[in-house]
Image 1 (cartoon, one colour):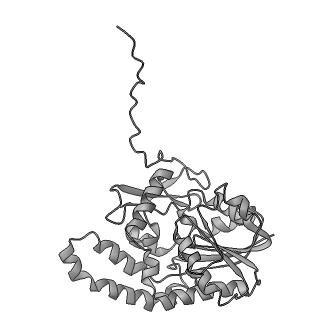
Image 2 (tube, rainbow, N blue to C red):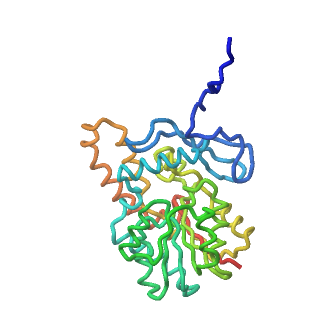
Image 3 (cartoon, rainbow, N blue to C red):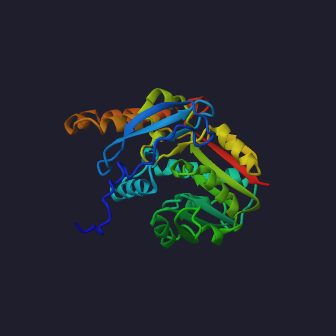
Length: 326
């Protein structure tokens, strides 16, 4: 019998969208992991399935486990934007409230420096650079984002240069080497597969003495413990890492930075209860959802009423760091 020259059939991987499950923490290597939440993907266009967030008992780092592969992450990002979905944090706040937050963040840098050039990473439609220009009229603002939204922002005149892709991309990073006095990342690191590599890249594009402005969700927030999978910052399947404040500060110091400010109060976003109600209602039958929809408005009013108190307590859901590259 003649020998066949056909390539032997090999069975495809069971799940091409997920890496193998980790047995240790990607931040500190600790093996004392505890499952924090299990949740399904959000949005009708997303592929079904459960997603797990584990927390390291040694360092407190929370992460998606098993993590999405680059193909899986790209699929979910595409489905998210193709569905014209927006982050609940943007919808939970009025345009005036978002503008106030952006102005307050810009003014924290004004007390430290008057930059000539500023890069906003994960800028989206560049709403922050548009507002920050009111505080820094002579600063050149550029934007970087993984989606074409940044090009739309360029055409709208909100930024001077648009860069599409990841900051760690070897085609992008060399072009931006030591070009900026300030690099900002607002709720961006939680989406990145390797936060340490992202931080190193951010410091690479900073000039010596430049400032790094970061805002991230706080995995130590009491809301995360009480609301479980209904807590918005868990954000499955797109949020890959949730970094505690202490871990991030220590990493920045190892990378040669001086921490100038760290605070939870100004970074807190009043959306925890209203987002939890919205996520829950998305799972109930449509007729019942319509009857219960006023609960979202009531929860939102409660979020805003409690915010002045909660932002000063362990319920605060985010933190801000300003560091200088020394």
